[in-house]
Length: 115
Length: 112
Image (cartoon, rainbow over all chains, first blue to last red):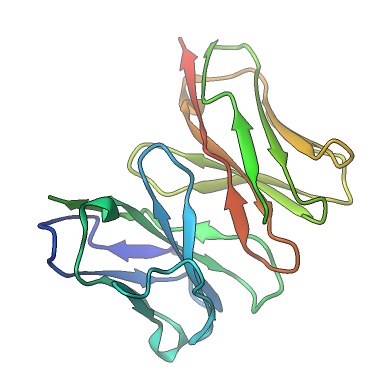
């Protein structure tokens, strides 16, 4: 079974520029999460999708961050405009059942550096 | 809301020795506690988990114990090997959801 795929793996941008990250979850996984992991810290949840609907985006800085999950499969996370403090690893995770399980499986992440 | 504290932040052990990482959580209604291993440049990998109706769970060299009264849980790795070197994160579920709050991580170094 293929794991969670993310791209790009690395991105360097200047502040005030825009950036987008892509995630392809494990096939058949209904729930998808985006996390932000700042160096030396644990992952922090940004947004949770179930199928193509948003379940929780309370921690997403909506003035600059947006996310979508079209057709309930792939997802993109966008930052516009980026700030220095957005430098982090952005992790995507998916869960196998529609709200029926706790296990989350993570992708390799995208390391964003904002200069 | 839920808060998870993790100790120690770094841990060095000799190969073959045991390693113990401890976490405490704040919400007594949390009922799921996973442990993740994160190697350099990779995403977190689930290594073991425990639910609140169980006090201990073991999988080969790793085990997790849960004390609901004290609201703490621990990861135990026996017979450590160099490939166990990584950052380990504990997490606790947010009651009523399938979401987690993660601890701050423990960097484990196994010295050959």
